[in-house]
Image 1 (cartoon, rainbow, N blue to C red):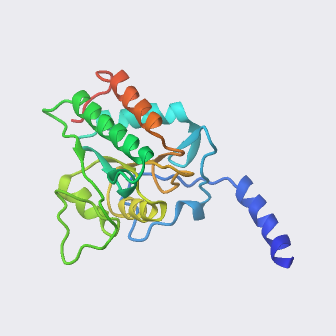
Image 2 (tube, helix red, strand yellow; image 1 turned 90 degrees about the vertical axis):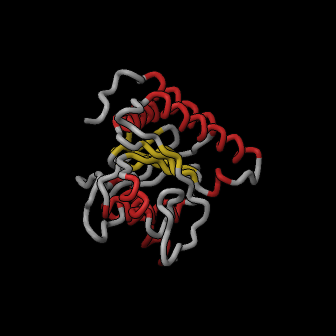
Length: 220
């Protein structure tokens, strides 16, 4: 059809296009562009991305571990897909997320750093006020980031459309470094993104944190 013949060249252009745009910590501006609209592409299986550049999964594991170990308030934001035990896979991921949090907590300097685990239990807007000490909401995640002075975080178990919304808002209004541990194809709006998340992959990230303990300079 005419639609098919028109779409194919566009698809090929998207596959081959290069960009100088980088997905960096903000604040970028009030309405940051979608990273995909700036030419950032998602990684293939076995890959990840850092600042929009495609890297190996192991490179991303090391980079994420270093960010957590150097942050003042490294934080994990688990979403509904891992908060609720709706199947065995979710329950295993939840245990892995808790293990990652406990590992980060054990490996940072308690005098200089404060690891946090703040849930995103649902996606409903919380008006007139959210309690940023105990939850994060995708419609105004910056409030939780600002209140707790979070400088590095990881989203895990958050539905993709809600994660993308949160990541753009955080990039637009804060300087927080964002990591996305996605069960699907990854998130181009995060500074660092993994894809095809499993309990084993989350456990590997915890292993990298433990491996690098004592080798990363703490925050000033």
